[in-house]
Image (spheres, rainbow, N blue to C red):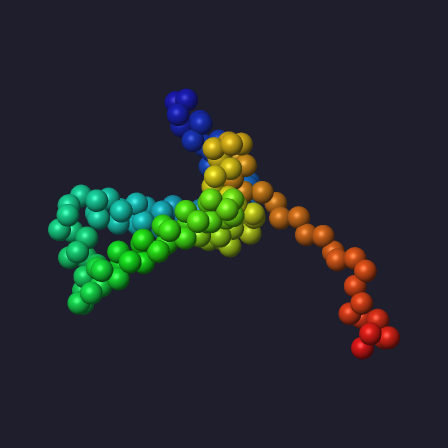
Length: 131
């Protein structure tokens, strides 16, 4: 029963952190399950991925090139300490400033942080003498 209580706490934390509703959480878990199922399907056999991806000539090679480009982009962004493509997507979904690498340094609770917006000072856009 300790595992169930721990899991309920993690779900409540995720809902508080992201502000997601129960219905949104159901969709999130459904999509997550579909993605995990697809990954398992692709990893179970060498023949599965080409048959599933190569519906036309060259599709699988295009998939490999896209995958390599994304991996290279993510490595370059990580090396420059910038958000990766996954961080960007998670930030757009949640509305927070998310960076998965924070989980290593600060813990899972700090992956997503509030975005602090500061109003600009000394602007001249609305002054009559600058128009």
